[in-house]
Image (cartoon, each protein chain N blue to C red):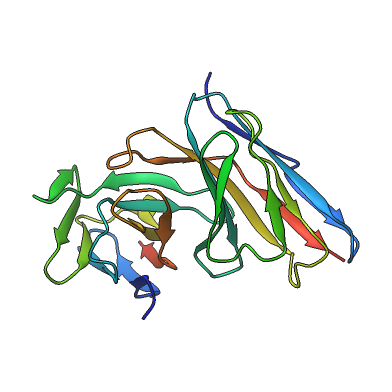
Length: 114
Length: 111
């Protein structure tokens, strides 16, 4: 059945290492999003993509990079330039109606930097 | 001014109570509005969209006030299972590209 798959679910890394989080969807959605959530906080937008080979920065893009080579895939790399990378990362895709379309989320990836 | 603001709560109510949450947004060009529910350490899930004329889904009623730039969520006859964080979501621009979340309002329903 259709959905969004994020991997890994839990990830531990040493400070200074780059980390790539995977996000795959088989919903045939054009738009995909990455959000970050810190404890007790709401979701903050990192990057989003409306179409293949195109993406835009969100509110907190510094220290992150993305690619959108395929419609189904939108991986996020957390680089060593990100000062506080420990967080819950959520990937979402959206139905193609920009007015009524809802977001569908993956189960998230919890990154802990030691 | 923050783009989307919510009262963080927590709202602590007994079963059967009626509770209302408000959310204000700063961009008058915003076109789409949603309420999401998030359980502890889980991903958010759509509770309901918010339409201009207001809409109801069982015990839940959503309202939009464009003039004052806020949306509201009313929960009637609260259940223990309603305990969660409720997130207000607004599109950032008229084109409806990016969606911005409020920080969420925490509801705790007790018996």
